[in-house]
Length: 268
Image 1 (cartoon, rainbow, N blue to C red):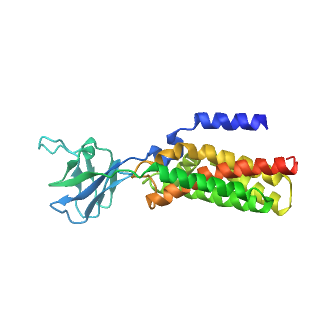
Image 2: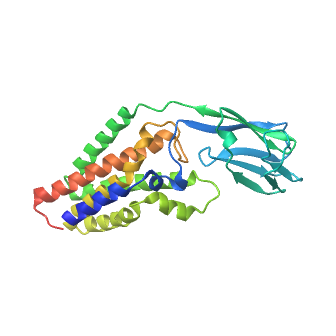
Image 3: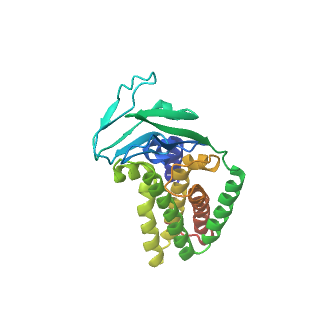
């Protein structure tokens, strides 16, 4: 048991925000957006992707188009996009409050929207409520297994949503990077369910371990409670709820599982 707690402490100490969000994207209060191409180019579209960090230009027209260029009007192209091609790149100009990037004989126009984040206190209260719910589930072995499945599903959903927020990169490697210690916790969830189905005393122990590991996995996501723009393919409040479920539910399962072992005198 002491070795397990030591391992979890080491995982918590080494967890970083980059492990929590696919592609190294992080929560923030600002987001760069494309407002249009002036004048429009037939078949050519532009959008900000990867949580507003990269500019994507799709050339659906019949002629090549040059994108990038200098700010002094010389329009020296950074890249020529052929018909049917898509080009994604970072450009410091897209961080200005109002910005323009040359595109052939036109310009891509955009702006940076700033939105204040939510009050994190409410999400902390929700997290505590979910922790209490997880602890209550720990009073019965079968309910503890159900709790493990629900909390793990929340973490999987968060990891998948974070991965889908990244454009133009392989899905599986990004998902693995966003999962962190979840890669260990997810298989252990199956072990907990099987143990519960067989009425094994180890159910509570495995559930407690999974809960503790999910807390470690969710710690880097605390920033989701205080920033408005989250790198998640879905509503920001949904992602915050998933983070609260991972943190609070995981904490409750860990406490409930170990309390069950204490009350029943069970050994893993």
